[in-house]
Image: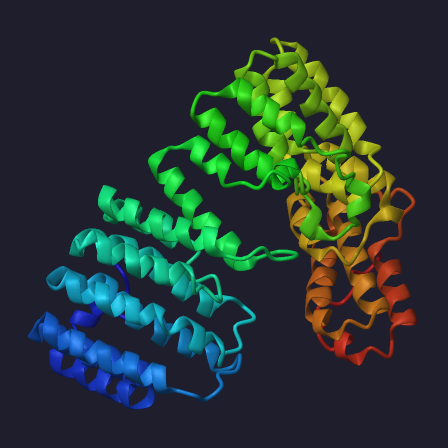
Length: 479
């Protein structure tokens, strides 16, 4: 049973309706979003038309707003915006799906003016509108509007899609269009595409129309119609060929998929070392990863397992791909996979990038080999990659406290050497973690003891008071 002070539905009910109403009124006076929520909930009690009228007022207010919303105000604005969306999609639709659909279209019309006056560097505002676009599909299915009128509205949205808010619209609303609506929309889109004048360079409007037509083709399962909409030059790109190949495989046309994919084969797989040590690249399958995935499926589907195995092994050798190696080992006969795995661990230990090797051994996972990597290649640790080193240190702490300590020392020294004051509290935590496992390290094997390490830090960085004031654990005596 939850303590009486724990906030749950049951404990709140025990306060009584009168007391809860008073608390909500106090909160509503302080926070406009709560007041709007309460007003909408009360309107919902009165019926669909009433709540629709309240939502309509809010949409009008949002439409007429002009003030800029900076990053500090953005979280509250996003909550308020999402509240309006969910009241349409979840509450109003229950009683008046027709009004809900109309109001959601009005809500979507707010995307451009809203995004023009908000700092959406986090993408959170745009995500609300993308969710609303998905809602349109469900609402249209419930409301059952005239298919031709719906097609016309979809056409208008797709051809005026400044911020990508309608990118998923055709796919989402396809079931509600029906055969009549699909035919009407295809006719409008095709006419618009053919009427566009030739343009030097990339035509974003034509590309958007083409994508909408391809979404219709996908909805009908018409692979040939999808392919016909892909410009000949674009089919030579590996990412485009991957999309075509996947659709051909789904349609059971694996031989055709092979031809399409091989015609767009990447000239040279991006080597892991060329991508740099940034963590965003660790575990990434590279720019041609999707092409490779589809190609492997096509090779298997056409009875070419040996070729597929060669591709998987090459991917492992070039970038220590965990996904490709697992598939490679799984395809080997019994017992051969054990020997092959041992071989791959040795290869990983000598891989040209320490960071990629550590990421691979952590993801596999192989803690014994990861500790060996750290101890033998300690000088190569990039202390700036805290996203990799911090979880790896926690993972290794119980099996190899020395390896964990070396990873943490690298992060500490990177922070202090670079005077990265925003990371001082993390560096102080790492130092405390080194202290906590120091007694577990019987032999430092040529590396500094914890006491020596701290003494060196104090000598080198004694003036970084902002860091040392955060160090609350004293160095161990006689360590």
